[in-house]
Length: 639
Ligand code: DMJ
Image: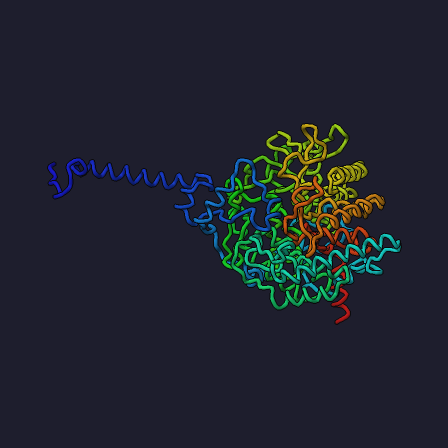
């Protein structure tokens, strides 16, 4: 067959037969399809993928610059992941694969009408039922009656503020408590004066800090402080805070927020404020905000992504997180707040979301029984075998035991998962230093890194509160372990010149509870060590914990108090301190609250009635059977 040459077209390109052209075109289109298909198999961090697959999950977000400080903890990058990719990604910000609208109440009502969710979630059985009849984990959080504050109050064993607002009889303890209250007032007054409505105070430059952890949300220090101000009886300050929430807390923001941080600080803060005061305003805001977090769960596995635009519902994984993964300490630290959102809204969706996370984690194979820090929200598989009780892992473990306690000890799955995780931690991570200090090392694919972060110091308190519900033969052992870890963390404070602890301390190359790297020497007003003192005091009443707390108060006053607030310091090993110019919102929410509780009687926010979320916001134990009885009684009376 002879083909006429097209004018102007060279023979080299077009001097082919039709059949040859056809085969060539076929080959070419096959190649293009193959290349395009291959994009799906590339790791999310590959730029090409982000350019071509504009609707897949992505990671923009600049990490580490937010509350410069706190982002660091959950955001510590694994060594193989640089910040560069996160920054590079910012220019090619793309949207989440699934952009379904947030789940609406109407949809939920439909489901409720169908009865299915309600059946699944009904958690109204009495504690006296046999173990086999006990509610399963899928039962938690929902109830057949709408929430009533009166019923809730009647089911508390003690008044939230105790007999006498927790005022201790002992004059010295009371003086110390008053000192902590003065510190809170000082921190608050300066925030109010220089940074009102911003997220945090910069005490040296006397201005506000916004950061990038909360999207467009503002007033993090206000929402984080509501309950602390209230329990301390700082009522003018509390009223100012409440008024601000009423008139200025705008939830219709558009920025990129950390799901975790918004949940623990804002949702947690609002929930606590509601449970303490009964002010509907806080409940409504908490539920409204909770609803805005739901689109982050629209992933193939239901494991939420770490970053969400609260306005559009678009969500991403952190750019620095290995292969678009989600972080254990982030998606594992939603349970307490979400169960309460269901409780208050009668909408089972929140509990469903966190129960789904729970189920996946329960089922998945765990290396040596341990939970690695990174999980793909797409495949549901672990992405790296890095395990830590400090940053990236920490509060996941905390929320297991607290879920069990908050369910009035009905959530058996949480209990089982917590104690088996603790066994794996003991078998693989707990170490004794040559000097006899017990510490939690980190684990990288079987290799131990003999380092403990300040963040990991919360574990003294966690193991302490869980001790009593462990196997009978283990109870004393757990309490001893909690005391040993708390002691090690105290050592990390006493071995520094300022008597404040570094961000991370090591147990190798001759080090014993001291930081060996310059970059680990800072202290940013973190609460974890004091948190463990508070729990250990409540559990043992050993006076040393109050003494250790007082040492911390003095050190904070001496080195962190500046003219206009409190500031973190860059090096705990020198007394000529350099301040970091940041008064963290968790200083008001956690550090000062735990100190105040340490010097108060045990009936101020009694552990019989309350669990603290990871930002120290108290949430009540859900006494399902009591609530049910109260509801039945109310019905009978009204007949
Ligand atoms: C707080 O925001 C919470 O305690 C969180 O779980 C860990 N980091 C800070 C305080 O250090």
